[in-house]
Amino acid sequence: MSVVRRRLGAALAAVLTAALAGTGLAACDSPSGSQGKPRPSTSSAELRRFYEQQLRWSVCGGRFECAKLEVPLDYAAPQGKTIRISVVRRPATGKRIGSLILNPGGPGASGIDYAMSAALTFSQAVRDRFDIVGFDPRGVDTSSPIRCVGDAELDRFVAMDASPDSRAEVVQLDQASRQFAVACGQRAADLLPHLSTRDIARDMDVLRAALGDDRLYYLGKSWGTFLGATYAELFPRNVGRMVLDGAVDPKLGTDDIGRAQARGFEGELANFIDFCVRADCPLGDDRRAAFRRLDQLLASLDRIPIPTADGRRLNQTLALYGITAPLYDDSTWPALRDALASALAGDGTDLLRLADEYFSRDPDGRYRHNITQVLYAVNCIDRPVAPASSFPALEPSYRAASPRFGPAVLWGNLPCAYWPVKAVDRPHAISAPGTPPILVVGTRNDPATPYAWAVSLADQLPHGVLLTYEGDGHTAYNMGNQCIDQAVDSYLITGRPPADGTRCE
Image (tube, one colour):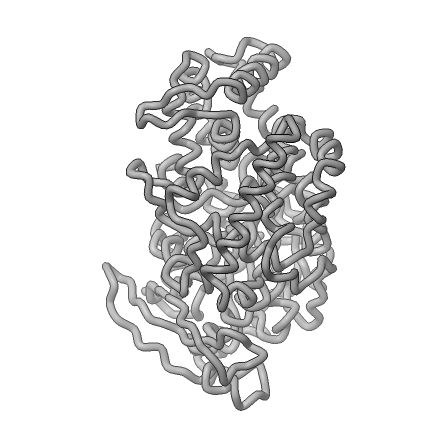
């Protein structure tokens, strides 16, 4: 997926909001079962030592404990180099069911940060029954992180013209994309071939065992749903209760994903415009006029970037990211409206701030997380990308899907065309025979993971259960809808999912 295509990071979500019918699982996944001896998921004696390792926990703030999990760099050669995965947990405060492992998306978002916001993320009932466990996947932040470029170089890279209008701009973007890929190959040569979603899913199974659970209890959002589905395919008999919220469709290739997401953002932008024109909209008082004024602003920024308070200038690309970020969460639409008003008045500060939060960039120019770099490292080897020479021919189909976001989504994939490691997987329907009911949550107007993907993933899983939120925004659990939250909490605690096809408004 391109940089446009990712969930808001934890920091952005915090700033803007304070950034998934059956018989149930109780019979096959009882609370007492999680206390038994962990079962290695391989007969390999070389892997057994990883599965049987004892985590050494230390207090790391408040109710949280931290540890390091040792895993093979290369699962095909487990006797070779190892890496360490950072893990955090908040122990259950009541009668414990097991460990609820989390992934907030990305790929590249910090599971450590997400878990440490457990008091905001989960009800007291869930925190009573589960150890809340987060981990930074390999390559992310505190787990053997990759660093392809420095902060100043990343500033220049993310500000590149994402919708080139001339041959010269295409050449410039091509050179920057090639240089980024080469830098990743040089600075992360050992780790780069082993950052696939399959590698991360295997780490998660080692973590399950090291935590003492026979089965995996899991909540994944956005890309975290792809991680969860991949785990279910690799270890179907180790799946316990699994919630996949904001689903990725594993059957889709890069361009199908890109066009669908561009279309999703275009649709959610229209929903924002409808919200805006109802009251004091700086873009105008009807949808057509508002889109026209927005297009004029973006075209103007492409020609002449405008000043901001920190001395940088807001160009078309950064403005597009600033617009994209609030489309993940409709509670942030007033902030977008105000930022657009300022930009129309010649001040790009607020829109640039939204773009900076999207990339986890602090005002001092430092990036809090390496999510942008991990995003490419994982996605570029998870599925093939078309050759760079074919991108101009692909652009009309992306632009037809979304005249405003389509080109940026397409060209955002260009570094993958030069990636130093070839893709190790291919799009395919998930095959996970033997799994219990898995709860898939889809939001009707989700711009980043379109609702159709949740329908498809629930159909692919042998016992997929679809739960629908009839609303806006990216992902639904703990986003303010009581119906969704109660259904997910009940499933996690009792193992009984809601009836397939349940809808919440």
